[in-house]
Image (tube, rainbow, N blue to C red; front, top):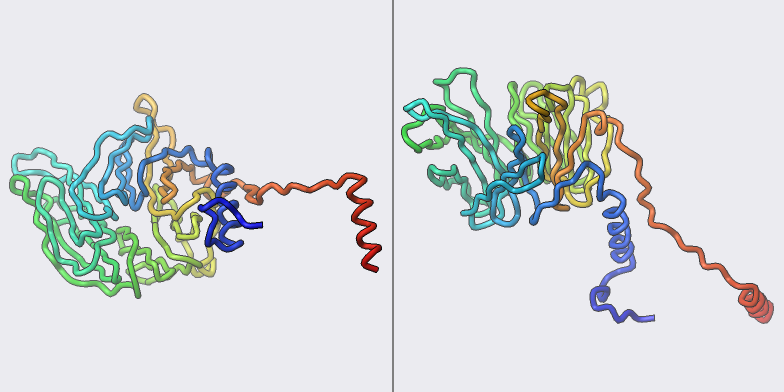
Length: 332
């Protein structure tokens, strides 16, 4: 029987089955991880106090209150999807703090908000990361990476004149075979997530975590704990034991199924009530348009979900069974 639904035309049986499974997964996971629904796809995420700062496919960055789920501010100006956000506070010459928001975009630019635009990459810029030195007089180290896997290292002064905070190019770093989706700086090196199916540590010793699909997000050592979190195109969150990757044969400790789209970013949220620390949670972002809030206990012991679509058994009446038996006997 042919369908009259134009939305189902030119789709294979497997595509129709996948669509049905996706609808069931959306229903099964709609309340998992306390989701906050946003209007566009989330490509990157950082957490500062009770705020989530997101880079989005809708050519904008956003600041969201994690407690209320409401948008506090939008940052518009890029001419393409905003793929990465970084936030750090520097000091002007008068000693006043100046929060620097750095955004990277497919429009081939890195924008330092309220400062200037730096254009150096020849391909869309996918991600950026800071590393803050202990000495105030020392410059920040900034890395940016593009869709060809090129990782560039820059410096930016912590004390700036007026609102000018120029980025100074240092060098190109050896990178991945293809697009780098996210960078994460740590004290002893740099982690990168790539669409070559790998997450890599650029340090001594180096390490590579293989995935079955594109790696889109990475969070090393959440709240100082010995774990590496990765998010993938396969919609899963993976938790790795960073204390001894060789001992675990570089296999994840747990695989979390909750999002219904690529997992694109992670952040840490320090939950407080009346100034008292309650808990530090991991926030995951996805192309399904949700932010999900997790404790490490939940990530290490994820809930088991029944993702199989319900089956409907067709019960034949006694008369139908008799007719079927007669047809089968006629064939004999």
